[in-house]
Length: 157
Image (cartoon, rainbow, N blue to C red):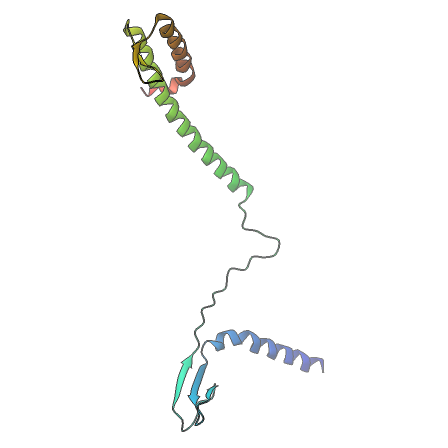
C-alpha cells in the first residue's frame, strides 16, 4: 500500500512539474457551431471549419533567492564603495583647492603690485580701495593662500 502511494505521489509530481513544459505546446481549436456558439477544445473538431490557436508562454522565472538572504552588498563591498566615493570627493576637493589657491595668489600679486586697486561696490560703482581696505584684503588673501595652497597645489602650478 505504501509503495502504491509513493508511486502515485511520484507520478502526480511528474505530471504537475511537466505541465509547465507541455502547456506552451498545446494547440487549442476554436470554431462556431450552427447556432453561432463559439467552442474551444484541445481536440481537433471533425467536419467543421476551425481556427487553430497556440499558447505563448511569456513567463520568465526570476532567480530564486534562498530565504534569509538578501542582495545587499557585503561589508567588504560597502567599504570598497565607500573608499571609492571618498577618493572621488578628495579629488574634487583638491581640484577646487588648486583653483582657489591660484586665485588667491593672483589676488596677492595684484594687491602687492599696484598702488591703486579698483573695486566694485555692492551697488555696481567702481572706486579705488583705501589703504586700510587694501591691507584688510591682503590679510584675507594670505589666509586663503595658507588654507588652499598646500604643497600638492603648489607643485601643480
